[in-house]
Length: 150
Image (cartoon, rainbow, N blue to C red; front, side, top):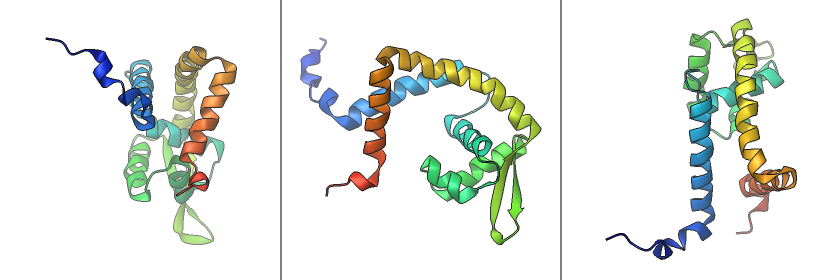
């Protein structure tokens, strides 16, 4: 016998549950749109950051993506192995590495940008411009430790 859905009512009121459901929907669409591209969302985001700020340091990319540096290293290793990005020494800091896209990285990102725009537009259209901007603002507040009240 199937259970009545009303018994699950508390879950949609949970921010964590609602975010997880939304993340799953966005992730599924990303996977479908980027099917065959052999790129994960974190890799795509890293490529975007490197494109926006050539010479950015690994620590800056790690902070911008909100991932631990130890998790960034294998991500960058794979991008380097695929010939999409490269690390170069930073002249004034022997411990740091500056990140740059290769020509192949620029070409790949140009192709992926069109897929990303369609992916983003799909979800933005569900909201409309005002709600889209409001959602991005609310999500930024949730992620910003400056808003901690505890």
